[in-house]
Length: 198
Ligand SMILES: CC(C)(COP(=O)(O)OP(=O)(O)OC[C@H]1O[C@@H](n2cnc3c(N)ncnc32)[C@H](O)[C@@H]1OP(=O)(O)O)[C@@H](O)C(=O)NCCC(=O)NCCS
Image (cartoon, rainbow, N blue to C red):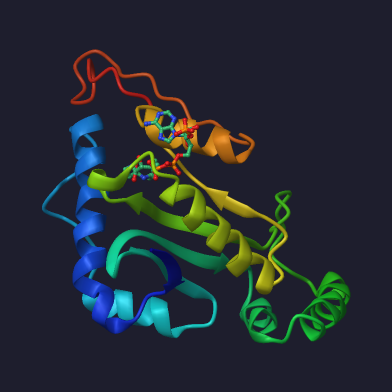
């Protein structure tokens, strides 16, 4: 049976194992860019992430075993928006509108880039033994619910070009590409000839 739920402290070892698979996929795909010995997925960080209202780890259990996870956070510009994310669904948008109209008259750091709140998927992985069984789709639907419940206007994530499975998946669920990042390795530099693009 498949069941999606927020992770608990007891899930750390299972989530860590999935995070290692995720890291290994990146080490295999871009060995010059990823260090397999430098995972920052600590137990302390995991506990903080699952205990705060603006971040979460969601897991998919299959017959009682954690088979997939997503780490998400509500990317907000200010502490006030973090507070808004904790408020009930009906109250949050009202407070946010009031805050935005007030913050417009305050002098702020000038930037032409509009800072939009979003739910960001930091990590997303399905155990290699159970892929292509629509577990990622189930997990994605839970990510959407989590984001909607917090009033996030959109979900964002980043992927690397080598990662064909996730590119296939994001196309499958209908995410749209809005930003690209290129690189051009120079002769004699360490990265010359790696042939990878981020
Ligand atoms: C990407 C990943 C999450 C997909 O998980 P999954 O459970 O196998 O995906 P689903 O079964 O829900 O796939 C749904 C659809 O996504 C697309 N898709 C999934 N895997 C794909 C692949 N390897 N190649 C192309 N499209 C793929 C397909 O359209 C698929 O539908 P279909 O099986 O009917 O063709 C999984 O391969 C994974 O965990 N990869 C390693 C971790 C990783 O790279 N995470 C992303 C970090 S940015």
